[in-house]
Image 1 (cartoon, one colour):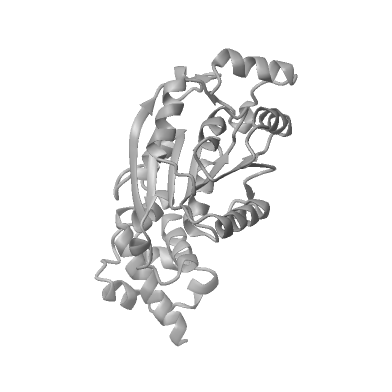
Image 2: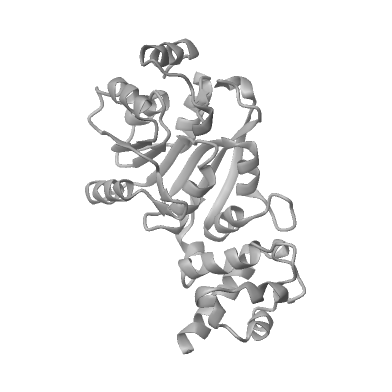
Length: 296
């Protein structure tokens, strides 16, 4: 682990400074780094993903425990710094680039590295990271949808993102991320963080949140890609009535003509608004839509 002074020295030696545009706020409270690692309960056969390792402070701790640590760092300068700091760990792989090739897709090199690691190790796939604020939600969502699925996530995120992860229907923070987490597992915020534990200090509070994937819950969804389409269709118009949202259907969903019958079969009132529906109700709609599409 690295103190604030050590992080500052590493950046100064590399001739760089924290980049606000990349959401670079380094976690400098060593007790909190320890807490995050302990919460993850990393074993020697586990694979850890870290997006935004920065100077490698957290990575140093996860690499002591995991079978493999796969880091993705967008900042080329920081990637060089971290690689040098982590030179003593043969189990660390550094990928230089964006963790998201597109908002809806994980970096192909990252997917390939995870796939290879899973052929060698039979433990869990864990996301353990102080996530960049501007990419946190998309990264976590993609690790729920696939093609590679994280067994659990232990992350530091902006407080707003943390609220979205654990939000309930009808709340202002309820959205696509919370629906997916509720539908496929359980999310729990276990620590609030003030700006002072980061350098430089962000303008908002943060939170440490865990998400544990539940294959049995996720298995209720007949088609995960279709589930994403259904949730996206309705939550894009979260304050309209369900029956009014369907006119915006595109792609596969455009083929559905009997939305009223689907709502009725799912025992959902078409006058409700998308922000009022629970994850289970979105699952019911998706599975009925899947049946309808299969019959066409």
